[in-house]
Amino acid sequence: MFKHILVPVDGSATARRAIDKAIAVAQAFDSTVTLIYVIDPYPFSSTGSVPSYAQIAHGQAEYLSAANAEGHKAIGAARQVFDSHGISVAGSVIEDQPVYQAILDTAEFLEADLVVMGSHGCRALEKQLVLGSVTAQVLSHAHLSVLVVRE
Image (cartoon, rainbow, N blue to C red):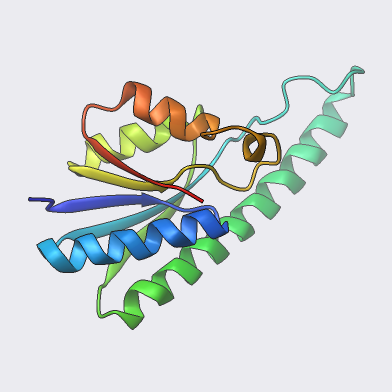
């Protein structure tokens, strides 16, 4: 039924629960699994003051470096969990915006037929919402099945 599962991860406890569900589905249907971690390359729309180009470039470089390191760490941790269940996975860190669209574009490119993701991830504001904004957008725009795993 589900040949290819896409699992967006962010290192959060909710993402870990989604990994557990994705493992169960992958085992049941002998599915291929791909992990992604999406980095919004321009997360700050306004800083309140007008920084110089050098400040922007330096801050952007630091942010992307830290975000890539965090992404590879999250992918590596998720990969270990899948490996421990005998499921090999592909995984990559992607820089794109908006994040929800990157998830959907990746699903389409890979011809995934299921996205398994947490109800919300690491972002502090999202933790106050019933569904994280990324999850809500994926659900609103998806043309494939989405399994949302609650916290």
